[in-house]
Image: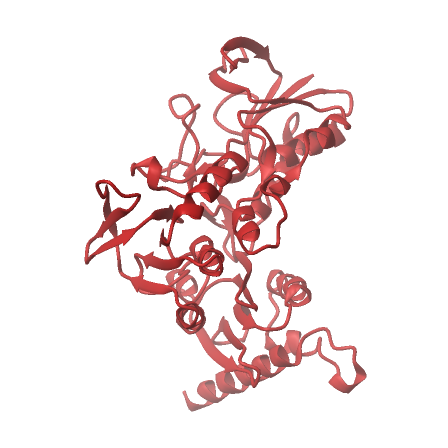
Amino acid sequence: MHIVIIGGSFAGVSAALSCKTYYPQAKITLIEKGTGLAYIANSLNEYLKGKLADLKNGYAYSIKDLQSKGINCLLNHEVTKIDSTNQILYVKASGDSMTLTYDYLILAMGGKGFTEEPVAALIDPHSYESSLKSFEKLQKAKTVLIVGGGTIGIEACEAYQRAGKDVTLLEAYPSLAVKYLDKPISQAVERLLVSHGVNVHKRELVNKIVPVNDTIAYQVITNNSTYLSDCVQFATNFTPNINLVENQIALLADRSIAVDEYLATSLKHTFAVGDLIQIPVGLHRKSLYWPSIQHSITSGSIVAANLIVPTKALPSSETCLYSKLYGYNLLSLGMTASSAEEEGIVTFTSTYVSQKGGQIFIISKADDGQILGIQWLSLAPLQAELALLMTGLQAKFSEDDFLVQAPPFYSGKSLIQFDLYKALYHHKSLRQKEAHLC
């Protein structure tokens, strides 16, 4: 049996490793058009902040990691055509061409940014090669403009500002990171950026980028204004990288590949994973296109179980963000108040501000206090709380269910930070008071 995976990022590597576990006797081939496997996209940021010694260290896996497990890796190879009827792949590399037959095919080409703007102006951190070129551009630049105030754009702001650049952030929505943050925490993040000299402009839609003659600078023209910058990074939403298959496979309205719950596509013996597909999210398993490394790893690891007989469905996920910004830890888990209301859920929200400058925003059902989402900005690490909160959201915990995880704090055995305990207690008291008044 020959299993071929197209794409060597996190979903593709995860699928290859999982296939080797399920089918140790199978021949497994991973095809990647780049020079390495699973490059971490924030490596350029970490390098600029001095936390990464070399951009080459941004690879999560080496080819030796997979070859040692008996997986054949074809780097610098690109699939140009799929003959799904005869199950043949047409592949090119360094001017040569070849064909491969397969029994099962896993599509893992990932996502891509979308822009038709001039390449010379752009910062692109998504591969080692593009990160290296971007670093060279940044060395010559004094100003950097970032289009998109989501998590990618916010993290890039800190990296470029710490590298001594004059940074401007443009966001189309009225607030930052709207997919993850409601207004109270979004505003706190914005204040943090502004306090470090980042120029934040919201409700700005980029219409055009025009090079300025005889300089390295570009004019960025929006619906409201014109900005001048030496470098530009588009940190807007990814789209599925479907160029290879778009004319022969069933797609959804957002151009992601249509799959069933076992990740099978409309093509025979062909599956799709990672940033090519939608995932079920939240209480009602609403299908959304939500690119993330964790989702890519999860779908890649599950697909192997379904190649011959569909046995393992893709589980529902909670939306999750964990980031660091200017010494703060930023956590967002579960639904935002906006997304809950869009699904017709009657919510109650509260904001708790700690004495140490942290802030916690809680979203629950108004009637029974079931916690739907938590957003937290804190100077203390939150990894331990992330695991507990994830478990609690999936188990449909109420405030009380979380509060019993916190025995007397003097025992030193509480499972949650005191700030979270106080925030949950504060939330419960306010919710019950409002219910009583009603």
